Length: 225
View 1 (cartoon, one colour):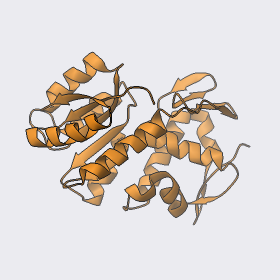
View 2: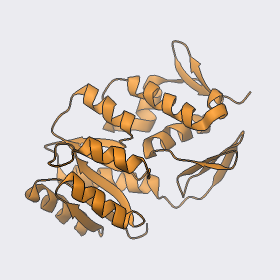
View 3: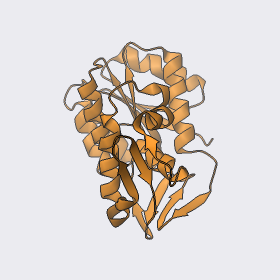
């Protein structure tokens, strides 16, 4: 994997140092921001260099949700939310905004590093196989999607969900199976988050969104007709 830069956004100095120390040991470059406004400033100055953002929810000046909204207006960079709140509705709200992962405080630094490296591998892997599904073209290395030749911005989780549907073309997939394969062990919440992601993906695919069919009582299926 190429050299990576990670932006840590947290108002607690000790938390930033703890995370930084573990990530530096793995060879990652670290940028830091102590509040939401500073995070936006650093991101805008380095958005072509930053590969992932670790973003706290509760911060002064500008909270994590507001920061995420601004970032998602211009970028689909992977974002992991760090939060002391574990309510299901908060997680669903975050996924609506484009969160890729959640980690609830307190957490093990080693688990955090494992999550970070897993996301970086998925987002910037070395495979470069282009696949065309009825005008929907996936570039796995660049983690990009084109619909009829036009670039389509997807978050990391949206990309992985669409890829999983495409890889299982013409197969009816239950919500539980999708959760197990796309969200993996990282998510234990309500399967309604899948419906939310599907809705956003369909919208972004435009007319091609009809290829994602709802299988009543089961889940979803990607089928070109």
